[in-house]
Image (cartoon, rainbow, N blue to C red; front, top):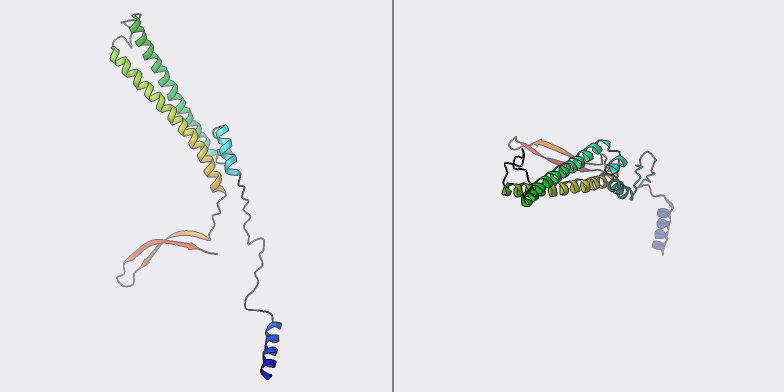
Length: 186
């Protein structure tokens, strides 16, 4: 019976004390990171960039990319139209030769035979098609860049996760060991 009294008294003593082994941590507003994550931001940037090339980059506030987008699209469209015009010139001259209405003293086409006119047509047709593919690729790359850039703008990068080069000296042979240190603090 005495043992039960001791157990009861000890239990009451232990239950009456506050646990001081762990402290409660309260978050202060300066400890938290206020990162607003908008899940629609990447989709909106891609939509704007698809609507008007470069508008997604402006939405992401990466204004320096806009001239690159327009230079790429402009160069692709220029080469497409240049090769299209040359293709039509060689094709029209070949058609005139087949009709018998061509000028044999023409300064450009007078010295070319029919085989060279056909090869020139194929050359400019291939380059025209390649220019169209490159222009479409730059347009798609513009959309993908706006989307990825909007995703990465919401990515939390701070000093809690860092990668640093590491160099230490081996104590056995006094040579230097090189490596990378990945640090995650929480």
